[in-house]
Length: 115
Image (tube, rainbow, N blue to C red; front, side, top):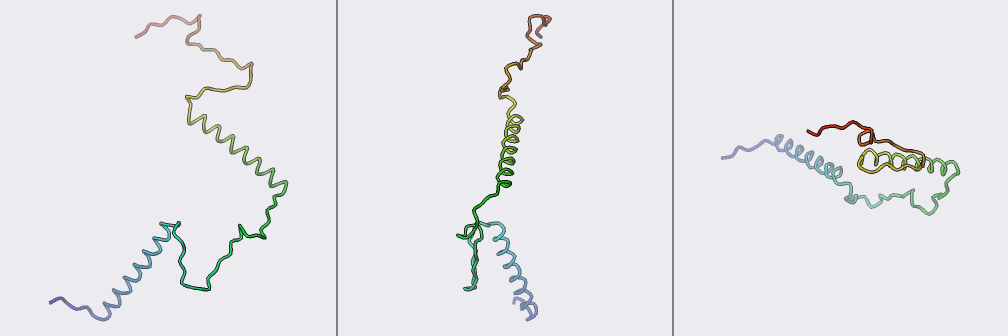
């Protein structure tokens, strides 16, 4: 016959299972933040301070200048990231006097034997 557990063991087992269930529920909350929040309290309410009608939609001149500077920096960083990520792209220059000389196929280069 199977051995019966004592009352203390049964209470301990119930406490351990309750803790495991609570940990599993919190793990689901963290693993799936897209799930809606479920509340059993009918008086629990929330107020969104970002899209309320009385929220100010104004931006100061300093903030606008700072935002423009940050966006310009981000654009420059993106351009340099493209340069580093794609070295096969041609180099574009806006300076008409910028020239380069190829030292490998110039007319005065010494003849080299192919292997």
